[in-house]
Length: 248
Ligand code: GLN
Image (cartoon, rainbow, N blue to C red):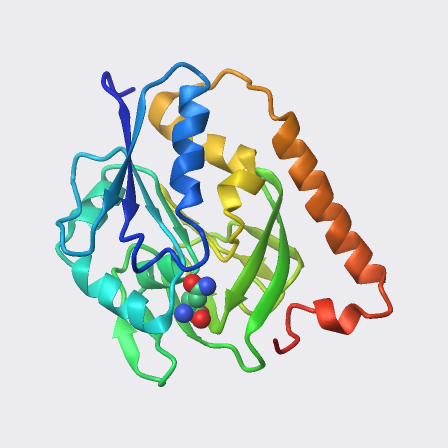
């Protein structure tokens, strides 16, 4: 366990902050503080070098051009060393895609990823995946929303984060996300860690060890409201407008 404050690096929020995933870093810090740990969120500017002294790295979603710029700034090996050293890396959507072997941009050009996850991303056959996403995982039922045109296929070294209950996930309504070593990736926005405290604690426990329970009544209320909304939408005669595959 770190003796000083736990440092959470929020990677390039100006590029990978389109979907509010910066909230994941705030959630990690706050859940530590509630338990009496010091925590610090480091907003890493795109012009700055990624710090190698952070304890957790968080990457969010973004547009195709932004993620292409982001991957070029992460190629110095710092993130790869952090992951190889067992530091948790949590990546969402564009963040997930750039940690893979390759990804396609909106024009169809292939870009090399960082190779931290054994996966490749091309484009969904159908329309963009937009809507609520529910994923059954070892950390329980995960709730969030998705908004992506990419389809990600996992290789043998990557395990899925979970199985899709509602939505599209990696692209075939079958699995979502990836887990490989200390890297956890998903298509869940929300921010995912605000909607899924168990996932946040899974990441934190890798840094500070066993975690004491905290009062999650507000988070549970949010989860119940979101899960009820998904169930209601599934029953609705207007279901078409809620379908994750519907064009927006
Ligand atoms: N640009 C990527 C895609 O559309 C990622 C989108 C996102 O991060 N939500 O697949």
